[in-house]
Image 1: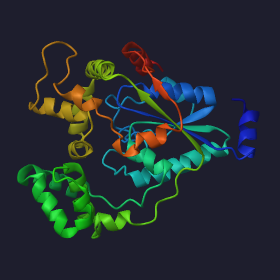
Image 2: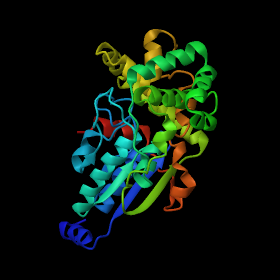
Image 3: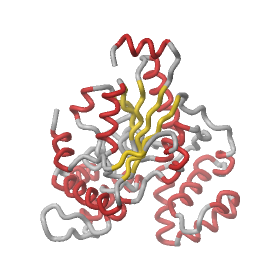
Length: 320
């Protein structure tokens, strides 16, 4: 898009927002770059792992060449250990998109975090405070006492939240208890506040999908590629730098398994490039269940079989 066309678009008040969503390894990053180049856009991270600057190999960020080709926003925005809440993302994405629109360009949000995209598209209640130390302790208690015991504790302190959470939903139960301890207020009171202002504009949401078998094959290829390009070494360096608790709290696919391998609690099948058993199945689960895809997908077509080859991804990573 020419500079004059971009200025004309800005002056007319037209505001478009494009979002590319999908499960791991469907090709969101490549498609997002293509759309940004075609539409005269700038890429905005919508992935809850890619916002951390210390996480590189295991997150599939755009390559250095791609980042140099056009502006990218919110990648590497936070240090590992900082809380990347949906509330923080909604505000940060809103600021980034407003600045992009002011330049007459199109924000292209790319990622797999449904709650992030929900925060940007519809707005969420203000984010409650968090505590990594409290979260780590609660997860240890869940392991030692059982998630049902923590659910019972939550039911006594915040019955409204406990009533809507399954008794074995460890992640959400510990989060609700963390909010209670960190803020002194139940999560239900936080969620009852008026939502933050969403990103304004005419939204087009593109869901990238693959058949289950093809997706599993792509995830297997990607995880092999991560192993071969130093995921274990990167994880070891993070642990040596004292980021172990922060990594554990993230529950990041790839890094969790790498930590288990380093600790000797997980074995890697024989053969160069083989991946830990169960990783492929875990990665295949969509990471954006809260997005309510049918509501969003009706705003734009589904792009199928758009994922790049593993060799192409390796070339992108090594370029620049």
